[in-house]
Length: 333
Ligand code: ADP
Ligand code: MG
Image (cartoon, rainbow, N blue to C red; front, side):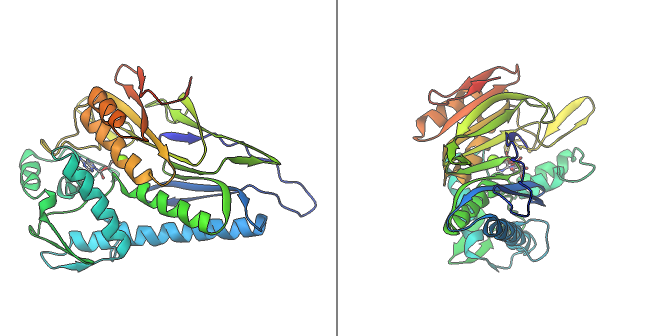
């Protein structure tokens, strides 16, 4: 988790009456997810509590659809279809389409059909290891978005061995949907974190005042103990991608989880982390773009964000130097 919520809890008053905010945390999508509601229309603490419960039910529903490891999930079914077609939920089709768009634009770098390769590295397991060159070469033969054939909600793979990995975009996508859900339920001020994919709804309400949410950007490899910068956010999203988030060490080298589709190995990059910020509703884009910046490196990453209206970013390179796009407003720490 690379973006840290700087939340200072407000003590609950005694005498039974509970005050907002309501905060809840749960483990979902292989990471810690949290939601804090500061203000909700026509309701108080009880209503907010109900909505936070529903928020996690929604997260569980998305996980049951989009997991690659849970039996019965659409992505699991696609990757175990052995050439058969799979009927998927609208949500799954939508995430895949968004992932395919970025895979087409950044062909050769970003690729949601890298699943056969990421499966070999298995960064989520307790003991990830370096796969054999033969296995990597074989898995690389079965990648490429041209394999995906969509007809309505039915997906089939031209190459039955091609596997999908939406890990680089799914949490951002879900964060967008979860924020929409909270707003539909009348939430006026809240912050969501799905493993550091942050969405802020409104501003932070404290008593009668509101002010920007303060979000800390983690110093890479600091185990969330140090912050490299603080950003003020309202109705915005921030997503960080970093090579230190999932990695293991072997033979004196670090192997991280963002894979170069050209080699099948962790990409050689001059970056440790990238944080991409945009307006609320664009968390899926921020998620994909943050990963793409790691794949492209500092200068090209900065250029591609600069070219995209409404996206700003902060880059921390391997020298631990910070570079920001022109409009990225933050407090250095
Ligand atoms: P996090 O998983 O920490 O949110 P990212 O958003 O940067 O981090 O996504 C990294 C994940 O994306 C990997 O764990 C893997 O599932 C997937 N992935 C790895 N390499 C690529 C790639 N070249 N293109 C698309 N997805 C990738
Ligand atoms: Mg990403």
